[in-house]
Length: 139
Image 1 (cartoon, one colour):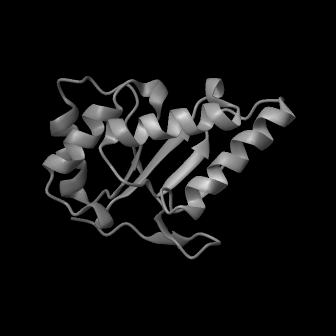
Image 2 (cartoon, helix red, strand yellow; image 1 turned 30 degrees about the vertical axis):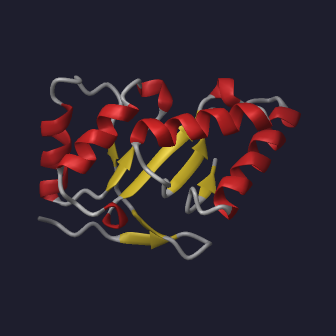
């Protein structure tokens, strides 16, 4: 197993410099693929509601037996969530589907030119961060 180096984010969180993307993985292969990724050293897993597999990714990660605090999980705010209430709804649903209390990184997936919607989304994301439901936020 390789040890993937980390980079320290500006809030002090260590993030692995290489992550494993979970888009377009055949649902029938997801458990094996994530298990294999963990076996070779991956601890950073990138997800998004648009991938349509949040629940399956969460289940596959739990099945590895790796402690949650040893994993780095990122998910994203999709374009249709750009509003204060929309961001809250999408984020809460993502946590529910992942069956996790927090994610390590929550980012805006597709920044829009809607400045007001973007600011409202960011305000909600700051609340998630302050509540400890995401360890870091970004774009």
